[in-house]
Amino acid sequence: MEQTEYMLCAKGMTKSFGITRALKGVELYLKKGEVLGLIGENGSGKSTLTSIIAGIQPADSGEVTLCGEAYSVKNSVEANQKGICMILQEKATFDQLSVAHNIFIGNETAFQKGGILDNERMYQEAEKILAELGVDGINPRDKIRDRSFEDGKLVELARAAFLKPRILIVDETTTALSQNGRAILYAMMEKIKKNGGGVIFISHDIQEMMEKCDRLTVLRDGDYVDTIDKPEFSEGKIKKLMVGREIADNYYRGDHVCSYEKEVVLRFEKVTTKHLKEVSLELHKGEILGFGGLADSGMHDIGKASFGAIPILEGQVADKSGEPISNPRESMQKRIAYIGKNRDQESLFPNSPIRDNIAIASYKKLAKSTFIAPGKETAFVQEWAEKLDVKMQNIDQYVMELSGGNKQKVALAKWLGFGADIFVLDCPTRGIDIGVKASIYRLMEELKAEGKSIILISEELPEVIGMSDRIVILKDGSVSGEFERSELLTEHTLINYMV
Ligand SMILES: Nc1ncnc2c1ncn2[C@@H]1O[C@H](COP(=O)(O)OP(=O)(O)O)[C@@H](O)[C@H]1O
Ligand SMILES: [Mg+2]
Picture 1 (cartoon, rainbow, N blue to C red):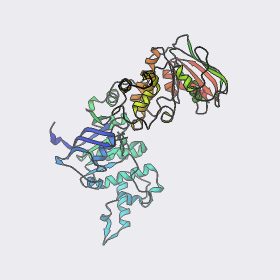
Picture 2 (cartoon, rainbow, N blue to C red):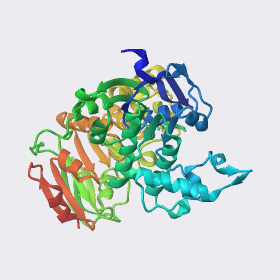
Picture 3 (cartoon, rainbow, N blue to C red):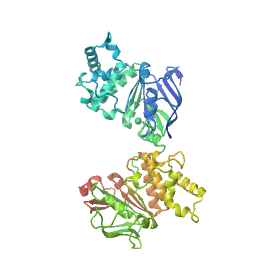
Picture 4 (cartoon, helix red, strand yellow):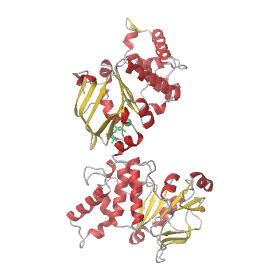
């Protein structure tokens, strides 16, 4: 393609925040008269890249050209002067100022006569701009603090409209807008396109991206992945590029059969805890046993009691030979693993390196006599971090620097390396993006196939239905329903037993 076709070229863009490499050499090419979509999972670098182009922060390295000339700006005002405007993901208006003052912020001199600001003329001009955009019901004299978040975003659009940018960047703005607000934004994008400008558009809504964009550039973990043209757009293809592999629409278990072996590996015998009342149940070898319920149903106590992490007031939790489990040390001896709902507090030491977090459950296994050969530990940790594909700099990186999904992988690596037979997982995919979520489901299937048992406690019913052999619904500390895996089971059915 001819170089001149592109109005904006960014090459080799890098940016780090401390140890986080937000951009690792990314490129972006924007043509005249197009809407270029920028897409990628949370944290892939979309906002960082675009805010660099908009002059909001500097890059560490990289080269940007605008209409064939070197482009470098020190701040957003300079970017505006060169015709580049950005609508930020976050709020970018000032509460104490009026709508009109927000629209013309930084450009007030246009309304000055002899050093005095002509407010009246400013209000009139603001009214004109808002009307041209098709915004009604916003008085230019109103203070922003008296207007809604959406109105604030519309004011930001008016600010951009006043600047008449050649290039408009829109970062995840549509979720804040109503149908009407979206129509206004889309019309503005269309107008810039028609005038031979360009738009860089960011949204999480893949359907919206496919509709509004002419081309899509995909980022993943700070890397440039690919750019595709409209005829190649499909939801499957885009998702695959985003996460780096095919993700089926339904990423839960493919089978609809309840299956497990006869052997009981864990038994609740009339267990009463602070939040449970005489609960009896059995977990079998090779079974995924799901638990659902409202927040106060006691379901989280099922997990804690299985690991001996809370006092059992009456009854007992027994292992396969009938011996009671009353503290985490005993449960570890019985090869039970637990990942709590509050991962950072319950399952990890965020202020320690990945190395210690993975090795901690296995020190006994790694120790020859009383000391651990460092090479052995390194090899062990490396192996499990790699098996779970933890995205990290190296195993000495601190766990607190990892994303939620990678933290969860570290917690799982610890227990897999330890060689647990029973995995008690409380909300294992909470706050985790789709790619890692899918890999956790695959892992659960593998564990089941190996004859391991899983207790899955979850606030997401589709996940419980999608993964479990049997489902137990709890209500007010008691079992209110029990279901076998079936294609016919719906969320609706389960909810009836929860409330
Ligand atoms: N100001 C900052 N300080 C520290 N880390 C940041 C900062 N801005 C972004 N990051 C990190 O850089 C990565 C990319 O973030 P971002 O560009 O916001 O992604 P996206 O917009 O695609 O969700 C993330 O890991 C994020 O946590
Ligand atoms: Mg962002």
